[in-house]
Amino acid sequence: MGTNFYARPFPCEHCGRSEIEYHIGKRSAGWPFAWRGYRLTEDDIQIQSVRGWATFLDESNAVIVDEYGLQYPRADFMKMARGWGRKNLSCEKRRDYGDRETIIDEEGYELALYEFS
Image (tube, rainbow, N blue to C red; front, side, top):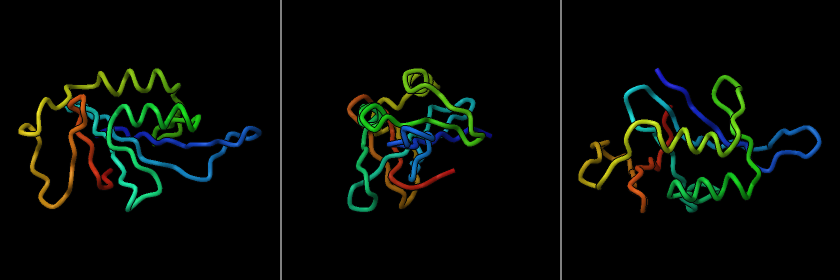
């Protein structure tokens, strides 16, 4: 069992609500943080690295929440997610997901270009 995390970008300055929500990834015991990536051709954002997530979260002033509705400060979330488990060190250490596409970013983090829960 794990916990999913979501970004709610460009929140209303009055009520804090956002019109959209993006799945950032999932934290599970014994596994590296499972990052979700996005491709511009299929989604309305493009995020293909952990640095890309950090930039997007900061530039959009995103509110980060888990699946239970708890909010996390961006810096605390990024520290937790980067440090959770071990990151993948090379493309050869990727798991085989069949036709599900993943990428390895410049820091060695694996991002799934498909939705998961």
